[in-house]
Image (cartoon, rainbow, N blue to C red; front, side, top):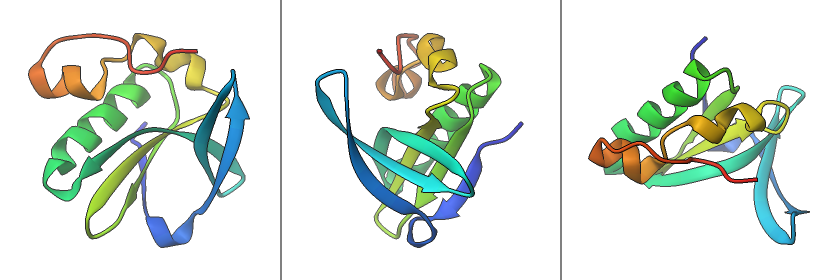
Length: 102
């Protein structure tokens, strides 16, 4: 399965409180996502690599695109599967780590 890629204008962003932290979320097509990371437009490859890695580990991922940035989101239903995915910094440097905690 490949990650979904959408224009940021097509999603509904919101904020939510989870584990004593404020998180950025969005919903699209009856699915709720939590923000994983934001990349500058010139780091598009990193965003797509992370999203693909999330889907390869069974998590449902989505990328939203703006002219200046890309955001990688993970479905709240499958975020527990993302614990073993390399972090965005690790993907950029080729080192493996944890992408999402908690």
